[in-house]
Length: 378
Image (cartoon, rainbow, N blue to C red; front, top):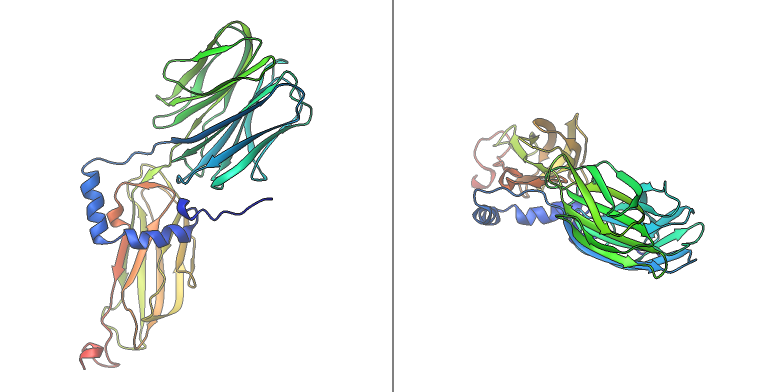
């Protein structure tokens, strides 16, 4: 049966992230962050969280792999399939279908596929790989989950190749610094005995029949790279893709109030300015939390960027590109009692190296109608 996981620990919803940030963005905590980080900057980094594998000898129609997805933020699942049969391949995890990103099926005797799922549910569920035919001569499946992955454009350009030779090799794989390159290989009637320079072997399995399959990763060195395996002569297929890290951006929020000493029942306007100051990356799924406290009654809101929900206090900006700003105006009536300190917090699907400017607060001193002295001093 399919289960539902709200993944609170992964902060995959806007509200969960914002509730945590209300705690984190306090002066004492922010000072600790800067003491710990010092003058250095956090850089986006893709991390391997878990790997599990499965295989079949011959004529099976499904291969099932139990896999536990952990609690890492900004997660991605990749499933690599190695086989030789000609049927259509589908993959599910927790009953949800994965998307095929690419395949190399030009060879009649060695084929590879790469499937993926963004933000898979945490917990232990089955990955089920199904073929419309059968896994003739055996099949191998490798399941990997990663954290620290760009949730909007997680994968670089797919690359593949096939051949009949020793040492399967795939060149000119597009990648970039801080990306993690992934590959899956299929080999018939020969053993895989090792991986190329700089690669980490994730699995290397003989199906028990003619097929062998393997998967590996290595850090992206720059514009392009190569992936290889050592083997005796055999027919092979290889597919590869580079995984992109969570982007880095410098988000900031400022807030002003039109009148800091209004009288009771007067309207005031808060002006919020959200910025992505210097990037270097664009911020996706950018949101600002500004739920009016009890000292105000909401009247209206105005913005040309995204939308504001007065009930939740969430200003959904969407994409905030480098060196761009967005503005929101909130008009409210000053109540006779309540909390007059109004705080806004900005967050996005990014790593933010300067979190100290992610929060802003405006306060008023409420006065008697027609007067200038503070309300509670009269």
